[in-house]
Amino acid sequence: MSLKITKIQKDGDAKEEYILLEATENVNISAYAVIDKTFNKDGKVSNVHKHFYRFPSKTVKKGEYVSLRTGKGTNTVGTFTDGSTVHRFYWGSDAAFWNDNNVEQAELLKVETVAKKAA
Image 1 (cartoon, rainbow, N blue to C red):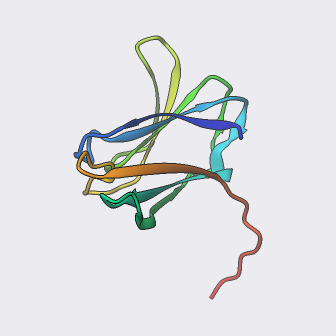
Image 2 (image 1 turned 120 degrees about the horizontal axis):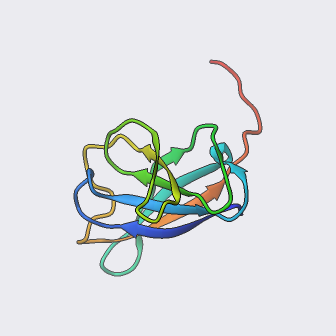
């Protein structure tokens, strides 16, 4: 995989939460998606893939970062204080996904569209 999850910022506030990915090689991120999985207090899956986000077509260079924020916003490119590039994307949710009260898991998927057909 050309991307790896480096951090999940759990805050309980959609405006502050994010998943941080790092490009391990040059990659068009449209082939990737992030989904969540939630577990109950017994460690059993309670919600499988409740939220799904597929990235739009965008080339990210090796060593750059991709931030997927839970809340609403406009996709932008910026820099961290160390000067590294971060491509920011927004899930568009009013509600937090990565709550501190529950155990969650983010999954990064490499996806391929096999077929499309208009309804």
